[in-house]
Image 1 (cartoon, rainbow, N blue to C red):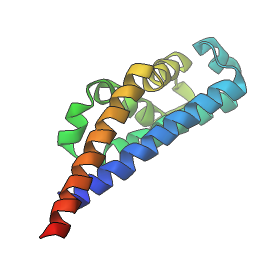
Image 2 (image 1 turned 60 degrees about the vertical axis):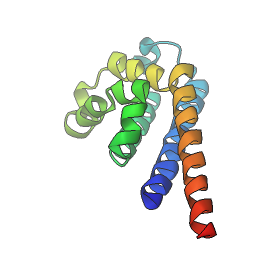
Image 3 (image 1 turned 45 degrees about the vertical axis):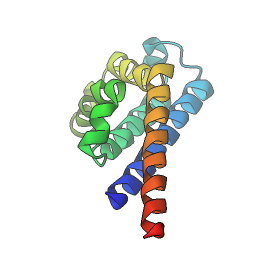
Length: 133
């Protein structure tokens, strides 16, 4: 379980960094609604790619851990990724904005950080027990 815990810690940290990047994109392009994404292709493209990256990382998280991430696990990052990968011209600024706002929500971030702390604590305890043996 040690290696899985370490991978989950790294993966969740990367996802949190991407969520932070979403906030920087929102700030840089002053995105306040999906209408702002309709008018700003670079922002739409950047946010869509970041969501795609988050989706790819989501696949790496251990199922037990992912199931504890009740909010994050329900966010439809895969739909955004599929549209972006296969039919980019039809991507909906509304759908991208919807997924983005769920990802950057305080509830999602707080839940992910709490689970990350639990995984880290569990990993530290198992490493400490291993060194005592």
